[in-house]
Image (cartoon, rainbow, N blue to C red; front, side, top):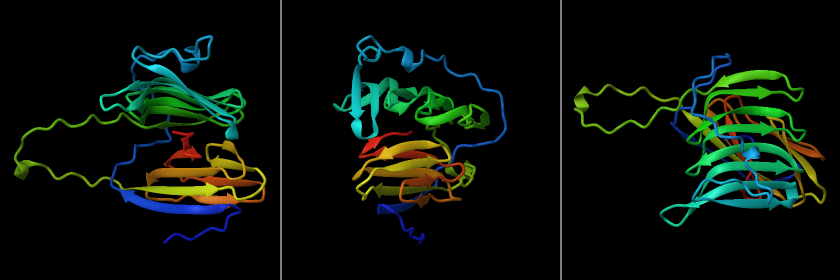
Length: 255
């Protein structure tokens, strides 16, 4: 049972589930960057004069504007066998006219080089995704442009090929570290705008009256989401080693 926290906003839901997926390895060392796939040109360099992305063959450029948070996202999609559309190709996000994220997707999963920036254009973090998971060495900078740490997420293990074997000869599998997933939904029930901050990444968003923000964090079973609130702002802190996703009125804002 988790202790409820009195907020200046309506706390709509708090859910906690557990799984036995292994969390990616992290270290605070600065290992050399492993050889990676050849990188394509950054997404910001693949925009036509009309504002559309230079999408791969068989895909089309898509654009979404969210006036409430002054955000514009542009990406490429392609249709798959069952009629669904999946993201495939370069992806951009601008907030207040400034480029804050650029990267790419492959078959619906983040893949390749990604860069996250603050509203003033300074780098916040940069690294690689491999089939939707962070991989290799990621770098993180503070608001003054100083490199604060490198984190090695390792190389995602390939899916094991199915082979026939004698169960009696199989070695027992080591128990994987447990992870925890915490979901938190917040709604601004005030008549005035609030500032929403996500830490320790220094992500900040305007939260208009009635706006709904949902945060989901996954990581080692060693922490929880912590909420701090005042009359002007709401701050959500994630724990060390966790990965966070954010949705604003149902639209994904963070990886």
